[in-house]
Image (cartoon, rainbow, N blue to C red; front, top):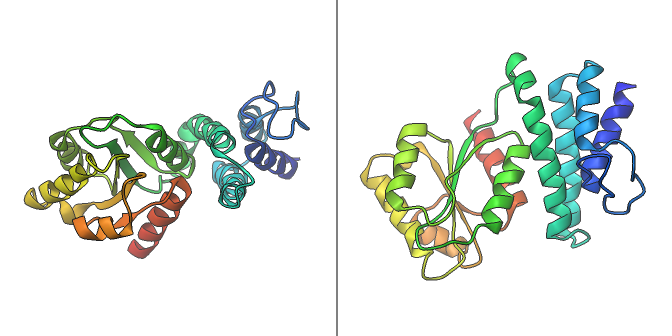
Length: 229
């Protein structure tokens, strides 16, 4: 029974169905339990939170990522799945803590000063939460000083910087320089993203990685974490 619940959970993640009221991508599951109901059902069936996360939520999002990469899914489809996984993860948080399951890592994310665009940033934050990372979202138009202060106080493993414009992406380099001046640069991995930036720009400013999208960001942070083991 529990294996069936996890299989259904995975499929509903792929369909982007948060609750029984959602139609999903092809509406074949309309009226049946969605991700949140199935997450609670799995807990009632005494399924391990780790299994729920790894075999249900994460496995489903991996399929969504593949479909997004091949353009079978578009941003609304991907975001529906990511939001469902994010809320399911919130349900699971106390159970994961009680079972001593550790979060994968701490991630702070911000749209740099002068830039008010947040759609891409929000997607990345949602996907990372669904992938098991603790995410602090500082919002938009965040001053360099505030970003550096948060790195100093919260000690995240990763710092994500977003910018859409060629004029505002310069603030990313400023953040990296301030981290260096504050003796914090070697304490955090810096990842950048947004329409204006590239691999070349990441290398130019001394960032650790450029991420094309949220799924690429997950792959990068997972890789960095594995290197620490």
